[in-house]
Amino acid sequence: MSEERAKPRIQAKREPMEQQDPHVRRHNFEEVALGFTEEQAVREAQRCLSCKKQPCVSGCPVEIDIPSFVSLVGERRFDDAIDKVREMNSLPAICGRVCPQEDQCEKLCILGKKWEPVSIGRLERFVADYQMKTGKTSVPEMPASTGKKVAVVGSGPAGLTVAGDLAKLGHQVTVFEALHKPGGVLVYGIPEFRLPKETVRKEVEYIEKLGAKVVCNFVVGKTRTIEELREEGFDAVFVATGAGLPYFMNIPGENLNGVYSANEFLTRSNLMKAYEFPKYDTPIKVGKRVAVVGGGNVAMDSARTAMRLGADEVYCIYRRSRAEMPAREEEIENALEEEMILRELTNPVRILGDDKGWVKEIECIKMQLGEPDASGRRRPVPVTDSEFRTPVDVVVMAIGQGPNPLVPSTTPGLKTTKWGNIIAAEVSGATSLDGVFAGGDIVTGAATVILAMGAGRTSARAIDDYLRRP
Image 1: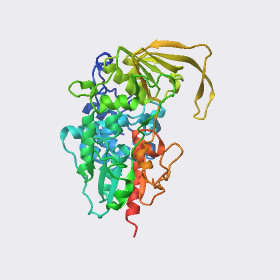
Image 2 (image 1 turned 60 degrees about the vertical axis):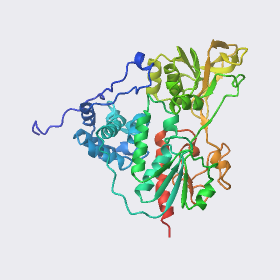
Image 3 (image 1 turned 90 degrees about the vertical axis):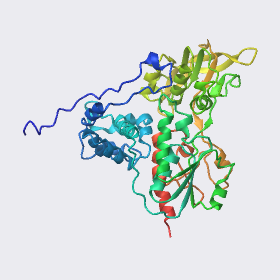
Image 4 (image 1 turned 135 degrees about the horizontal axis):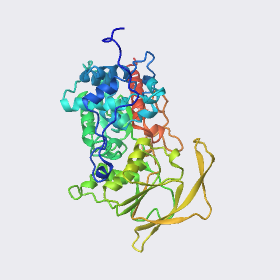
């Protein structure tokens, strides 16, 4: 083989992505990861082996043709690359930032078996951001209208995915959002420094360019019920109301002032812009010492938000060890770089207040790991007589959240589990009511953005089949 045609040697290590300095970023809400340059993106894409079996695709819940789009990046055909991604994914700038690729497509990358896998997520973010910067957003040629109308309840990742896919199939789609801005958990739950809200807005605009209509300040279950939407002419309904019901530990002191659910704490900061007070009239108390209870991504988001709101010390209290924490490793590392204090193998037993009803201390007990429980992780067991107290001003409970109960409670005949999740067929999303489908966290419980999008994608196919029946 001639030298000109010889394939360059594969680079073992991934291209590093530049980030804000930890000591700087813990004081601002600007995005932490700064993205690839064009040269970095090309170099990273050229690491791809172009495998014939394409195992990475099987790890993608929305079925992106990963080798094709990566190859296009390697050829500097960035516009073609984003068009290839958008064939299957209407929210690439979001997925490129918050999707756990390390447990999905990148986990199956053949290159990763010997060296580091291709940075598929970072390349997806790059092409999406490139398109937004150049303003060359292309909308595919749309089919003739089917005349069928679909109501989508909730504008989070599952709802937006269903809306985009059904619009591209020729159906008239209306997305109903209870809050004053569309995006669901993407705007109220995930902080600005991880997912800029301007990015979400532009992705929602793309869904609208596909033909979907978005209606905010519309609470399905109050403004209209599912039954009333059907009576008003919607041929099918997709419920994607998410998991917005906060969980608490039911320990003494949880009703004190200064105790937040993570939902409220993050919503006040992310959606209602409390960090720009008094420009935005949304007060939020933080104080100098904050305890965040939990070990998932929401806990990391809460801890890192508290730092940026002015807390001097932020404790993450988690009952297992770091090895069992469900948060993405990248998020844990970022939080620790920003000087979050991890109190692992520790569990709160009560919260103590002052004579005015405000939090002043949290009392915890040390834990040790016993035998594995149903989750496969070793069960945390209290250590006798190991209680201790820590002075804090605010406590944020980030131990999970449950399904929003409003739609199930106002929709007779809609079957739910004992936990309140809507019962839906695994692939189609079909519920106990004819023409009513559901997907995302309202069905599965709190999960990832990309899994909700995957549910939206498969449900869109099922809804299309339903609408086309003779």
